[in-house]
Image 1: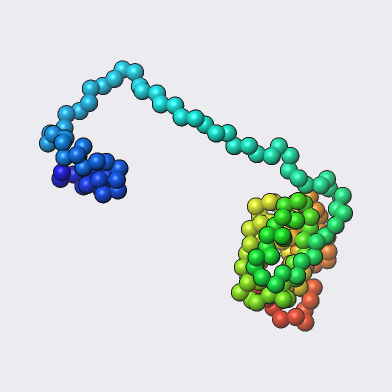
Image 2 (image 1 turned 90 degrees about the vertical axis):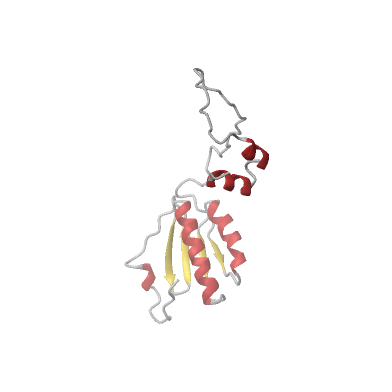
Amino acid sequence: MSNPLKKTMVYLGLADEEEVYDEPAAATPAPRRDKPVEKTAPVTPIHRPAVVRQPAAGTVSEILTVHPKQYRDAQGIAEAFRDGVPVIINLSQMSDADARRLVDFASGLSLGLFGRIERVTSKVFLLSPENIAVSGEGAVAQADPESAPFVP
């Protein structure tokens, strides 16, 4: 058993030691078959929702404001945003480390669902779904110049 591949296969449990040791030293190539062997396996289809649960443009009936205290509050933010509800996140009650994690999560969430995330003040962010247009003058990040800058 001088072949390192066979030794590795035995070590990983992909081959039995008897099969490897019983093989002749000079392996002869297997005879060619004219017809390929077909192996079939059951296929499980992936069911995806046909309709995305987003309200029609211009029919926003609520905006959720969240004051998370821990990172685990991100699940409620994600569920509301996934349902097409704009979410305002106020991070003033969180530690800086958890706030950064939550902003990273919210950024990925908005990117994954084709929405937008905008900074309103240093610790307040707006998550808006793709069908919601946010208008305002200038950069939204400069709305509160007195507050200390928060870098997520």
